[in-house]
Image 1 (cartoon, rainbow, N blue to C red):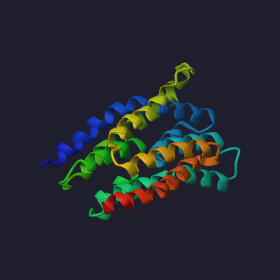
Image 2 (cartoon, rainbow, N blue to C red):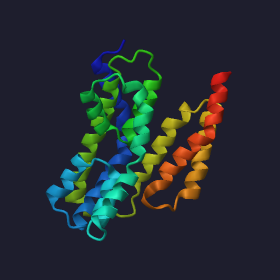
Image 3 (cartoon, helix red, strand yellow):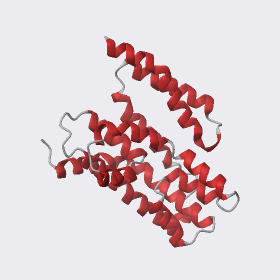
Length: 229
């Protein structure tokens, strides 16, 4: 049985490759935050308070040009995907204390979820398993804070035609693909991909939520069929 430290180290090590895509994304936010008129302290603290890249970029771009209500609803809509993450990972964390669940929910970002949910699914003994998410989440948190600082102070020196942030979705594909084995999983992935293309022009990134929920509904009959066999 793995110790707390071994779970934690696995989370850190498995999360590190994804930082290749996370770091330039943090740079982009740092640049936009300063260009939008935020102070150095405001730009940096937003990364530790909100800690959600897409939401921070939206805030930096629009906080001076839209109403507070529109800004808040936009950020909430963008972050709705974290509700899906929470529902999915709750199966493995529901026995933890409230203190642990609050800490891990704060660290439950896209890349940390992608790494840890795969890890959790391979472990039969769930004791201390949450330390993996602690390791992956803290790794991403530190990278995001550092990349934000680089964007704030040195972002203008970086050529605009470099688009390393595209590595993030490629990393997700590489992580998720080996996990797709059952018929209902294949159907859910295909449906979500097609629906994402159809809904892509929806505002506030609602296409992510709608595509995910509808693909789950489409795959539900196949889940029930597979479980009954």
